[in-house]
Image 1 (cartoon, rainbow, N blue to C red):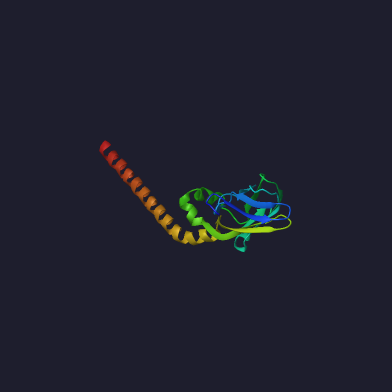
Image 2: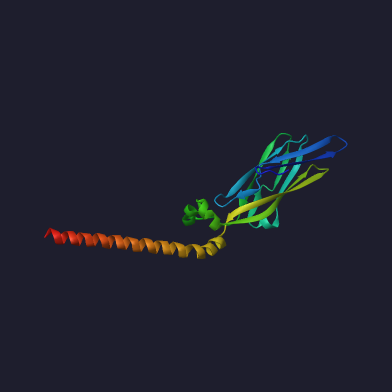
Length: 187
C-alpha cells in the first residue's frame, strides 16, 4: 500500500527451510521536490522475518532522464536493519538570480516542471524475487517553463516598473513646483 509519506510492501514465500514474509518500508513520498535541492534521501527498513540478499532500485524511463539513484543496489539488508539511497537530480536547478525568486511559492509555479514516472524496487533473496512499482512524481527546475512564462510575466513587470517610474517623476515634479512656489513667496 502506498501513502503520502511513504510506501511499504511485502510478499510471503515458502521455501523448504522456512516461510519468509518480506516487508519493506520506504520513506518515498508520491511527490519529490528537487526544485531547490540536489537530492532526496530515502530510507528502507526491513520489517520482514527474513534477510534480504539484494534490493535493486530503478527509475522509469520518464524519470531516468532527470534523476539517478545512488546506490542503485543495496546488499544484505538484515531483519530490522535499515539502509538509505538517494534520488539525485541530474538536471539544472534555479541559479543565483532565480533562486531568490523561486524561494517563493508564487514563483515556483512559473519555473517548475513535474515529471510523472515510477520507481521500481526489486527484492531478490537468491531463490525468489519480488518487484514493486511505486508511482512517483518529481518536480524540477525547467528553463523551458521560465522562458514560456516570461513571455506572460515580463510585460506585466515592465508595465508595473513603467507605472512606478511615471509616479516617481510626478512626485518629483510636484515637489519641485512646491519649492519654486515657496521661493516666490519668500522674496
